[in-house]
Length: 129
Image 1: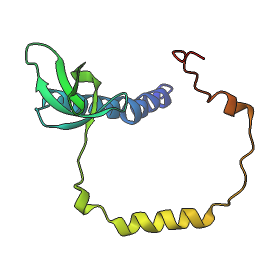
Image 2: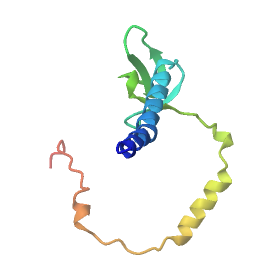
Image 3: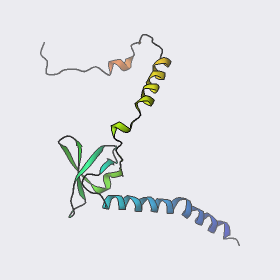
């Protein structure tokens, strides 16, 4: 009976922390193994793209992140598949209402210059005076 609280804590630890992590890892492995060209994905760095090529002999895939820009990454860099919503399904009325409310709440005041503004200066080193 002295060990019962320790056993309960270990069982709770397993079911609350270890088992869910194992499920997430299994889902991630299945996702990465089932990638096909044309899949829309988000990489772990937050970069969105389309899988263009899956190399069967290695763990690499090629992802197009912009027109004509293809990067090669390991499968483990894929965080999730992304569902693309067609533009005609986006409710434009909701978007315009949100922007109208935001503009009503905004107060127009002259901007004060701060020291942070000096950090945003762009210097053209190629320019000759």
